[in-house]
Amino acid sequence: MKNEKSASIHAFDIGDNVSYTAVGICRITGIEKKCFDGENEYDYYILSPVNSNTSKYYLPVDKCEGKLRKLLSKEQIIDIIDNALKSDDIDWESNCRERKAKFNSILSGDDSEQLFQMLKTIHFQQEKNKLSGKKLVNSDEAVMKAAENIVFQEFAVVLGIEYDEVKNFISQRAEKII
Image (cartoon, rainbow, N blue to C red; front, side, top):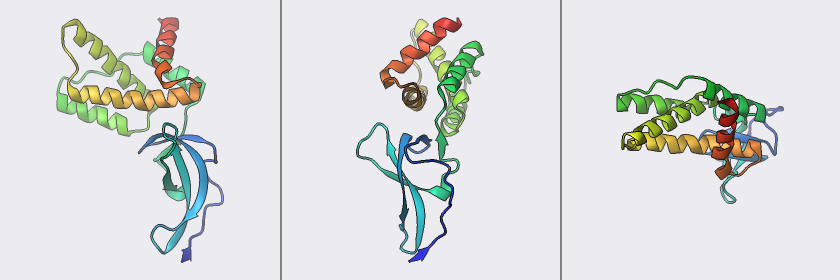
């Protein structure tokens, strides 16, 4: 078995909570040398999703760029909320296909501020639709749920609150801003 040179400095430490694009919020529970191809041994982060006690993922340490990021700080979360509440919405694209593509691009990106702004926009559109007796289309509803899951998971972990309390935290913050 060929032993590949491992990076001496890792971008993340054991115990760090990170956002893993493929899964959500995970804790790095270890770093192990593994050989999955029968020839090369690499260092892998062992990632355990915070919402699962049984799942475990292995991500090569040298290939984590763009897949893992450190979680926001409490101050960054508050700034994101405040800025989104003070700013205009993302323009609501009337063409459903174009809107879906735009939203999916934001969902797959790594811009927390843009993601939160999109979530705010969808919520406002949902409220606007309710006033006229309409609902969001299924694709918008699915994007909203996915965005909420990403945002709420991270906010809950960083703020030290339950997932179900995040919406209330944002509402309380909105009352201070408005």
